[in-house]
Amino acid sequence: MKKQADTMRKRPFIPIVSDKKTKTLPADFPVYVERNRYQTDAPIKTIHVHDCLEIGFCHAGNGIFICGDRILPYSKGDVTVFNEVSAHFASSASGTRSNWTFLFFEPPVFLADSCGKTDILSTSRLCGRSFPYVFSRKKYPLISELFEKLLSELNGRKKNYQTSFKALMVRFLIEVDRASGEHISEPLSRNIKISRNALERISPALNYLGNHYHEQVTVREIAKRTYVSVETLRRLFHKAVRKSPEKYLHDLRISMAANLLENTSDAVIDIAGRVGYTSLSSFNRQFKSKKGISPREWRKKGKF
Image 1 (spheres, helix red, strand yellow):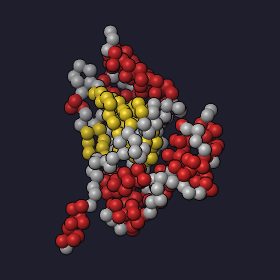
Image 2 (tube, rainbow, N blue to C red; image 1 turned 180 degrees about the horizontal axis):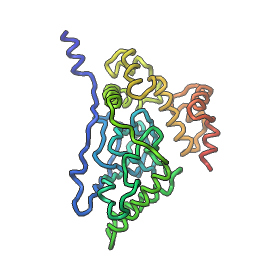
Image 3 (spheres, rainbow, N blue to C red; image 1 turned 45 degrees about the horizontal axis):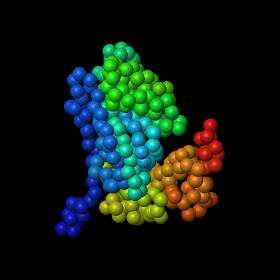
């Protein structure tokens, strides 16, 4: 019994916490700015959601965001958008750190006098299984450019900068809406809460895979680090991310490979090795299964 109790005490548990940013929003200009936020590859301590909209800009580095069952690679110049129901965490690529600026605000409160009642101000639209969350600079250059202009207004504080900032933010949200299309927020039902509980249980495994996906990881090793049996690990993975640990690992590797194909000129065989594949044929097969086209076709597609 004592051994079981000791195991329970040391069992890793990373909770989903709500970060109350609205308490810090200035009354006269309700936007909270967090500059020079450095993200490392260190183990995460919490999975978080905010009580307002979070928009981020990556100044340097690369890595991944995890949002539910979504694996979202990011690179320098990319923009992120997370609403109040999107629990997420991030990790920089192994051995690196990335530099971010984040903006937090409530669109219906902050922009009501700028554009009246419009769906653009509804943050409930900014989530869902097909919502991008990470808007790459290469694919969405205007969104990245608009964010940089927003930062320029905040940093310069020239005459009428607040009016200019609001106008730019309306344009930014319009472009995000155009890029993402129609998305409906999933209600916080009992099933969603169960998934979140499972996500908390396997979050140490997700964090470990985020830093070690390029290594020869086994399901037994993942289960050991989560302090559960292999069978329990599989059950929790299906509840939290709707796939097996093996499928999650392959999807993570392919997501990182796709990002490297788009943003580097490295040879396909080198990229395959960097994301954990010892066989080029296995990499090509997994990539086509996930993306529908070969790695070379993916790279060619990204150039246009």
